[in-house]
Image 1 (cartoon, rainbow, N blue to C red):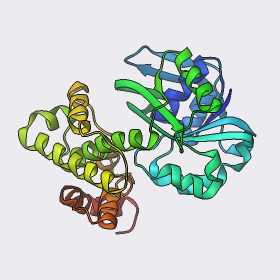
Image 2: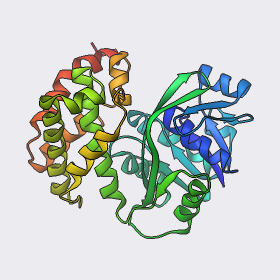
Image 3: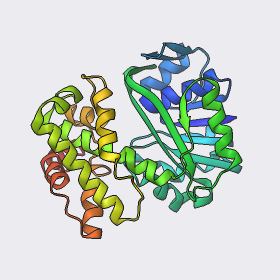
Image 4: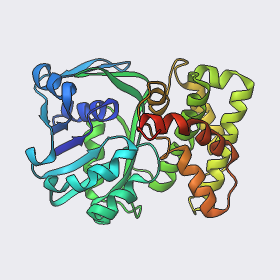
Length: 309
């Protein structure tokens, strides 16, 4: 397969790198010093699953340098999706499809509005990873996992082909029976851990062992569960206990990308995560006091990072 990875940071660098290891023709779209380092020295990935390096990584600064591909992995920040969606057209051939891997639950619809629903599948991933230095990705924890599926939950040759490419190199991957429920299950985890981690400035190990913050995590997850049901998303009633079990298995020092961005004074995914829970709650008349508190507390920092105050 010919693959374009739009956003070659912790997520795109890792999963795109694995596809390159599997022998697929992978183009990494990046910018600045990160792009330059990949061009000069290849893409390096330091991972708890085993380090690897793509020596002659194919790179580009913009889609027009690549041309049509079979699949596009969109791995930019959630708030960047509307910005990059109109730039994807040079990557499209007759059968090209796009897999969003952002945190949040709105990326697929945002892409579909611009490029057409027939080109978009739902997607998600689970990994703790980031750019450690230009050209170097650090996978710091969590079993790397990727899932994707047609928006109507039908089986398709294109998603099966991508699934087999990931399985060939040993990446845990799946086509869920219900991709929307799978995306919301990941959202229930990431929005809760990101928001509470950012407010408390504490790693996962602290959040899960202090009784008060553990309880707060469960309350935040419950709010997302209630919103999901109100929106017609079919989450299982065991999803919160299952997610807390997942939290208990993560590295104690782990933090979310949103939490790290906020701590570093960078624009973050606050609106796509906790802000989205609040918006959806208001739309469906579901109370979301924990996420409303998180959003209100973090909003001044977010506005400052974006130069609005």
